[in-house]
Image 1: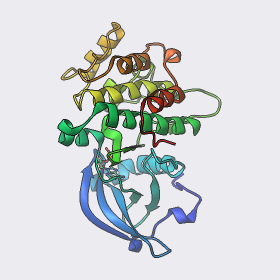
Image 2: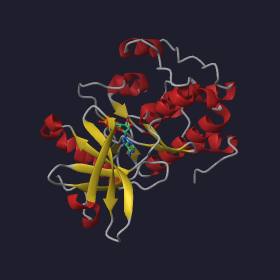
Image 3: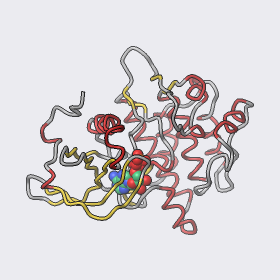
Length: 284
Ligand code: ADP
């Protein structure tokens, strides 16, 4: 089924779009900044995502399925899909999140960042966006710092729904793992062992994501291969406490990395932990 939405307004005629400079390059897609002329005459800045030419045939369905997930979501901590343009090329028109990923931001602003300010706010917002996804029964499956974009210094948004899936109503996890390149260092044990993805495996990835933040953009498990990181986890070891990470926050990470999924905190609880801990709580 290639109809990603029933709503006509979700389709954008290409005449209403103006494509500008390239701002990002992913594995399957390029992202441009641009403008969108709305029906009411308003001109808005947007991000326009297109599949690489050679990828169109093989990844069209995946692209449309990402759009299908995103069109249903509407939350200030989740990147908004404005619409899809079907021709001549297939385009996804998203809210422009201008400051890039938190990894890029940390790299440039290392010396100015106060972990007790920015990191706490971002963590609260990521948890809040994930709580919203959970309420809507979506598992993200690729939560990582590279997929958290910044609209401002104090507004983080979850992006890249390429691997996301809706959970059915009668089972509590989604099963998938069919070859390919997987971000194993962000995966919970039940994901790398059995291909099981759930809100609880997203919580594991949340722990790795905030670890990346507090480690100021360091790669988790350094140069280790995915398979070596898995071995370490299975031996009961975990990512080490980053120098700038307060003890109570490292304890939260460790709870996210409980081997048994049920023992991990919920996103509800994580929102409370970070929101209550932060003076600045623009999350609801
Ligand atoms: P892929 O899924 O193919 O890896 P991404 O969705 O990760 O592609 O996009 C690639 C890059 O484009 C991101 O790392 C980010 O820098 C940029 N980007 C993606 N979406 C947006 C957006 N809505 N606003 C601004 N920049 C974006």
